[in-house]
Length: 368
Image (cartoon, rainbow, N blue to C red):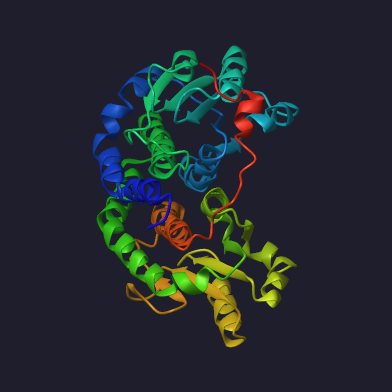
């Protein structure tokens, strides 16, 4: 047993909670969004801004393709560091701003919320603490609806944040007439399908990891690739690998990866993980994986094509095959991968690193 075994076990339990949390968000969406929907009656927004830091920012990237496609609105994803740049060419007086912070105490997020609200933006504070400063500064506060998460490594809160951003946008689309009842029903049916088969996929992922952990522990860096719509997921998991086992991890869109980063594989100390969606870029991603395996390069894939199951280098998950909802299928599976790797490193005594301290304290990133 490793020195952090109890903590890592708790984080893995949070990953497992993605299943009931996702089902609860879908079942309770009308109630959770009720106050927000009353507040926006008769309002028509020109754009949507999804706002957050770290995992909350990545959650926004996950949801952006869905909301843009179904609402036919410009959807921007930003962090506080990007705020000044965004304002150089845009106004937000007729925008819907969804600002996410699980604690509700992110100082930089709260400051931008104040400034955008003063411009006339309608601000939804998406938080796990409805008594927090973020909730109090917002036009309407909405609960992330994932319960308590006592961990600095955000897991179930990431998917819950993305799901709630999606639900807020979809519910607004329905009441505003931007989204038809038929289209709304199809999306919700697919979300229900994803929630229904999530546990099966998590169980498969654990078995796949058990077969490969010893091999994966030999790599000194990891790259994650996928299509452009999967950017939020690959960024989030790269962040989790760096947070947990302190190894370099990066994220690329598939075309970016082909123009230089793939050369890391020549050292045999870097491994590639690809998200093979059945939608965008499926043929390209599957051909890359097959080519690299022929060359005996360390390439692994998580795919939606084929019967659920796994081989040494490939995990096939059950899928509704709706590319706009890929984040809800891939994210929990990759969380199993990253936390399983962390657990193995801890058990083997491979993560005994001296940390320089918490930088958030140096910058006072939280308000009291």
